[in-house]
Length: 262
Image (cartoon, rainbow, N blue to C red; front, side, top):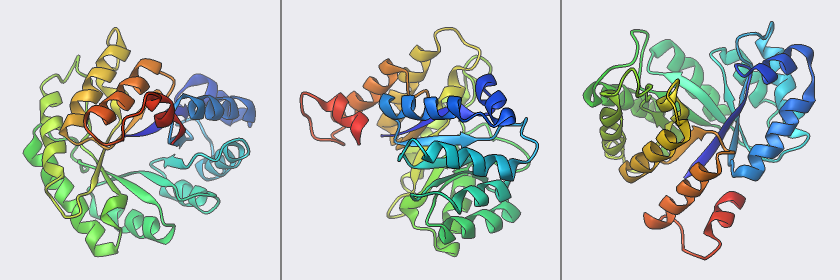
């Protein structure tokens, strides 16, 4: 299970303020904290308040890389900002994200190949997120076909079937699980799967319980990665334990410590 730490995002007040003021301290503190918590990637998102997202992304990548060697997941709807960040990443990064819309596919897939980056593809288009697994899978197939067309290795394509908050879209939860199962049959080798997992618990009480329960369910369906709170110890320990019980990692008594240090 690949853990992508969600916290260096300008939508959080402390990070948004730090980006506006060019104060590296909050970003660097969260980078180190998430790395210690078990993050295998750090999501970097300028957020909506950045005046110049290209320059903000470059600055964020630079200051995070001053204190962390963890690979980065560059997150923006501004693909110029993502490309600017990719150009200065010290390790192969991940792009977050590209919907199944042809103009965006033509912009982002070649960029991922050029920079040897993994890519998160979204099972949606300009009309929004479908309700059922069947239509999510149709978008997933478009993304798989695009990977083949543009030469993106299938193991570098992460498909996100887009979970919505359970308190407003409860009927989507089983559809997303079924989508994950069937994505694994779309190609050989299969694309990987990812979820912005924290979305499932938005504005619900006891978010950690919902997140870790749904994560474990999704892992049994074939989930490979999740964008989560990397400092939720219960969630990280559940991910490590599920990896052992699904026979994805070799058991040892210190398996949680090993999981965090990968």
